[in-house]
Image (cartoon, rainbow, N blue to C red; front, side):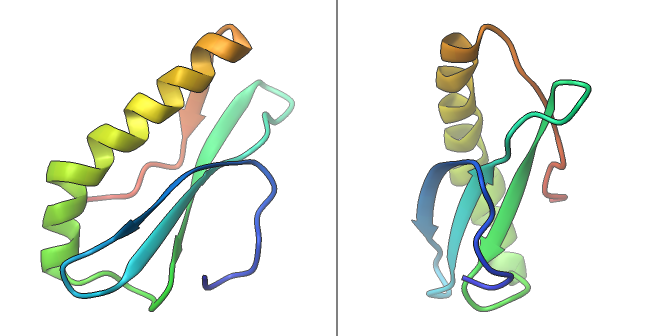
Length: 84
């Protein structure tokens, strides 16, 4: 994936209609307790078709998986949402 490896928890890897691949990492908490989603695209900027697929399919899965971790960690504040 582009940008090198980010420390944190991988929430999953998704393949998109264009063939592009996205891995979403939930970063470790910062000093305020906030965590960020880091989006690592295999082929750079997603297409409009990929963004639509992200909104309809992937985004709900990301949040569901983040919520699973919320239960483990006793609460979570996430910043850094992908626009779209």
